[in-house]
Length: 239
Length: 239
DNA sequence: CGCCGTATTGAGCGCTCTCAACGAGGGTGG
DNA sequence: CCACCCTCGTTGAGAGCGCTCAATACGGCG
Image (cartoon, rainbow over all chains, first blue to last red; front, side):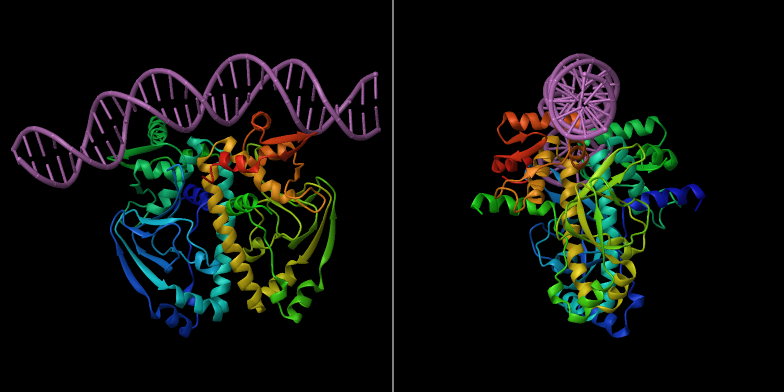
């Protein structure tokens, strides 16, 4: 990774997280209990993993694919809050607080998900201080990132928000199948709009603008960043 | 409290939190250790409790007064993320993650703050599973609230955001010195603007609009909600 | 009284949203 | 194989919202 790429990663890292648990620090017994009753779920594109206002079935771990976490409003508008990829862990916070989900989870592409049932998770939470400490650290970190994101949504315009969104998505969509640092972002215009918090038309126009400025290129419907350093400047999170 | 007030409280409750620890569930020894080295800080209006980019001195508990938590951007814009009042606990998340503060804390009025030093807190965190569990539950709850707020900032206009902000502030500013449910919100226009994420002029004009619609009245510089139920409808979080 | 910080009002521009129409591409059924 | 449909993306135009600059009012304090 080049210096520029590291700089970008560090700056963008304040606005998204990879939720995970270090199972290495678990005892052998804890790890065994954790995975004892796990189930493997297989989701097709657009399939719903869980619905808003339901209780969580357990803790989910993404083995492959991508899951969008979104919140639907009364007026029909929709906000995508997170996009989870391989290794990400979610769905457990509502178990801890014993509240209904305030979001839905839907597969963006074919995905394989591991489910640790609620009973297993809650039992281990009572007995394992390691798990408590790990989760506390993870959620605290994520809390900080959410505050940073509120700042962005409250203060920045669409160009800036889309710039940042694309830089985040570049990381989410990077994988061994893509060419080094630059990923092919295959999110639909609608999903992008819901992620950035604007209309589809605005997304399309802003992408055209980025193309004119040679910041990105498009291949079919997907987007590839060509000059992340300029996109970073445009995002307003770095100077 | 009337039915309407309860409805409002429930709806608005999804967008702000009262951070706290139930010391009752601590053992006598834990409680003693926790407060063993506490310090009492006294802050004047506008005095800085801690600065962005510094390490946290410890965990803060508000005994009286109000503290704003804000994040300053490169371009000079400022976002108020939270306003803490009596009983609120903060400043500890950065201790857990061992990162610098991503926000500053500044007194909105004369405030008394209890400081539990970092060493004490971190020591107890290692040994007390009760503390871990309590904090994990608190931060998980707050996480959910932040996601709800991101949705608001991403999707809603100024009228809606200010409506919600005033309803939240009404709760924060309610106290035994005020008349029942309706509080006198004394936040300055600048702070309101930084809280809602807009300009001072926009805040002033929107307040004028609210006054015309008989939703609020102003007494000097402070704002008093007169028809919270209509403000709630206007906020778009309830139908 | 004069000063300073804060609040208010006005005007104009630019951004963003909405409505509407058109284009491209993939899938399905005749 | 072609015609049709459906979904998704793109483009255009106009209205409204929100931002910025600038000027004026208000209120507390020295």
